[in-house]
Image (cartoon, rainbow, N blue to C red; front, top):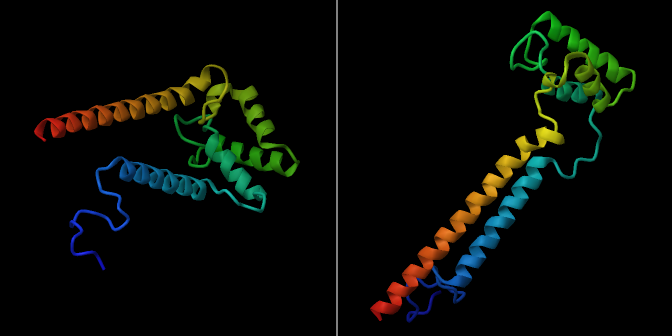
Length: 160
């Protein structure tokens, strides 16, 4: 039960909302929750290797249909897509790795056959630009909140 002399807005731990300690605790809690959510979503802790069917489905989703535009082999019913699915299954059955299968399609159709851009060379910009933009946006938000907190502190100091 709360002490009758304790203001209503004060937390029992002695950390007041709006204080620096409260902000730090909130930020740490947010980071922990985000890390747990990302770990669960990424499938950390999977123990069994993927089956051939799962590998085939993954590859089919990453390779563009040779005769369609912006649709994967898995989603297309075109004859070229059906042939590509058979080729993927055949190569997986013969023991080819996922990278070897992708390289086979790239050698035959060119790099545009992959729906996911490569993470090296010029293709790395596709991955780096959003990351840099996100970091800059987060930094701008931090500066904005820091300036706002300083402005409120000077207003409170002036009002006292």
